[in-house]
Length: 255
Image 1 (spheres, rainbow, N blue to C red):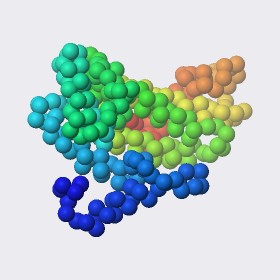
Image 2: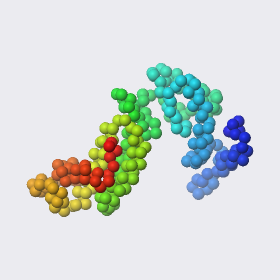
Image 3: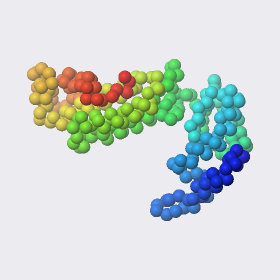
Image 4: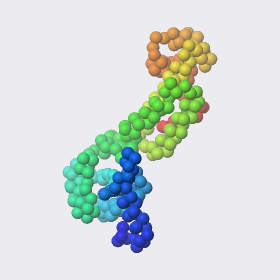
């Protein structure tokens, strides 16, 4: 920092920030090394320090992507990857005086690792949402659509809409859409299940009101199967088609 910035007030402010200490279990603990995690200064200093690494990778002609101190480099073979990994560990240690976390560093196929929630498809290397990111979204959706919350379907969809639109704004660049279509189908099934539970003894009347014929509505209402099984039944698909949820404002991730 001192080599590139002559503003002593700014340097003093950064120095005081680094030595201010952190709150741990209600007590102030002295900072002896590193930058407090989650603070605004951490990514700024990371980018300043690793700017030199970016230019070194660019000079070597590597294809790479970096966010803060997490980065991936793409090469043509396993052997090339191992050579680059060893070379960069030496460079980062000798030139930047940093230590590479060997437990989080590896040479791996692109589709076997993820970066910021994305990975690649195995067949054609198209951008894809990682399984971990998809499962995290499902956890949020399960929480919002719990029957015990006792909200109306419109309220549930309004809350889901906020989550889904934010998620789609970030992951909308994904090129493989089939996993997103599966999530869309799963969300609609969750909502069909949610409504069926809310209808309870009114199930037959509600199915008839939504256009299901008498015999199918009766067989569904008297079925011994549970709500989740029935959420995939012809009667509920007919009563609550995809457009029913679209009209209520439910976004589609794969639209």
